[in-house]
Structure formats: C-alpha cells, structure tokens
Figure 1 (tube, helix red, strand yellow):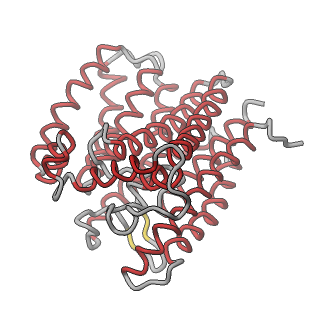
Figure 2 (cartoon, rainbow, N blue to C red; figure 1 turned 120 degrees about the vertical axis):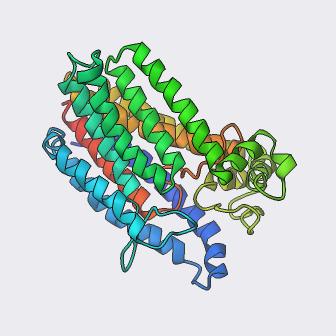
Length: 361
C-alpha cells in the first residue's frame, strides 16, 4: 500500500506543489500579459494546465518504462534529437531565436528533449565504458564528440543557458563516473575561453555580462531587467506584499512569468515564500539522491543522479540570475515557470525518477 513515506508519493507531492505554485503565478502574471496581446485573462494559465495534463500522462509513461529500456533506445533518441534540433532552423524565429517547432495548438522545444537524452547517454556510457573512462581515445574523446555535436546545435539556436546547463551536468556525471580529474580540468579550461569568446562575439551576450557586473550603469538598457528583479525581491521583505499584490508584474519586469518568476514570488510572498520554494527543490534533490544511492547498478545510479542534478542546477541558475549572482541566461524555474515543453519534459523526468525508486525495492 502506498503511503507518504513512499518516495514515489513524495516525488509526486513535491513536483505537484511546485506546479500549483506555477499555476498561481502564471495566472497572476499571465492575465496581464494576455490582455496586452488581446487574449483572455486565462490564456496562459489554460495553456499551462493543458501542458500539465499531458505531463501527467507522460509522467505515467515514464514511470511504466523500465530504466534498462532506455539503453536500447539511445542511438534512436540521440539521432531523433539531432534531427529536431536541425528542424528548428526551418521555422520562423521567435524573439530572434530558433528554439521551437510550431504545431497547430502548441510549440515544441527540442532542447528540452536534449537534456533528457544526454543524461541517459552519459549514464549508459559511464557504466559501459567504466574500465576505459580514464583513457582519452576510447573513453573521453567519444563522449566529448557526442556532447559537442548536441550542444553545438543548441548553441546555434542560440540557447546559451541550456548549453551551459547540459555541459555542467555532463561534467558532474563524468566526475562521479570516475573520469581522471586532469581531463575535467582540461575540459573546464577549454570551455571557459570558448564561452568567453562566444560572449564577446555576440553583442547582446557581452552587454548582458557587462550589465551584470554593473547593472546601475545600464539601468535603462541591458541592466533594466536585473534591476527590476532586485527591486521586486527587495520590496518583498520577509513576508511579502501579499498574493496578487506585485507591482513589478505590471509590465515593469520583462519575462516575469518565465525567466523571472522567482522574483515575483519573492515580491508577493517574501523571504518566507521564496525559501519555501527553495526547500521544495532541495527536498526533491535529497529524495533523488537517496534513491540513487540505493542502486547497485551504476547505470541506474548515474541516470537518477543526472536528472536530480539537472533539476537542481537549473533551479540554481534561475534563482541566481534573479538575485543578481549570475548573468541573465534565460533559464526557467523547473515546474513553476510558464512553458509547455519544459513542464512536460520535467514531468517525464519525475516519472523516470519514480521508476528508479520502484526498481530499488
């Protein structure tokens, strides 16, 4: 009999709690955004609710699929993801980026699938190549090529935030998997100058970095969004202004329902409310870590940890951007921010984690 002590139930509870928080703020912020584009006030909420219903169905599918099944599908999943990442360039850009494949009733973001596929790939690879992971030609190089091809397409969209997220999680898995530290250091030393070069080559990225270092000098241009975010968080104080009483959502803070939703939560619910969200995210990671450590099968352990770190690090980046300790990257808050593809992908991950918990019994 399932009880709350069962980690599967706890995973559902935590993820659903975050999703409900998301519903509240997507309606609160989205109603204003919808009126601005001539839509009814429930427009964004209805779309997110639809994604959540699909996500619950996808979560159940993820729960029913044995973890070992993904091993057999890796070549197909990897190739499919590459094809989808190429297809985005055949459609009209949205806000200057080719990240979505439009369908009649929704748009699909292939980079969300890429996050899942790369975790599955590295979990399988680290288990399969355990005795060769210290070797460059037979261990490190093939994995680097697979990672490089995937993130290159994502970077071209451009989606710098997702690129950094996938690289970070991949490095963590390689470290946990036993890769020689010197290769990790070399990898970091390669990634940093490449990242800096890419930032300097793209004017908007350079402007974001410069404004991050001194937002007040660029308060009317590239520093505007960060300043408005800090104003929202600071004005929330300890207990917040109260649900629905945000002033920054009144078109002062751009992307308030996606990349800066944590700022509005902090403004309305204060330090207490924002801390509650952080506790939920940390609790989910603790659950995932406990599940992973019970697996004797390294593939299943790496798979579980990979998804746990994916959610944790994405959350950290989102929150870090809103409080001004990281440059603006356009990363959403898992389960909370508006975004159909992201929510469905995250619910699928929850299903996989529930399956992982079951396979430890």
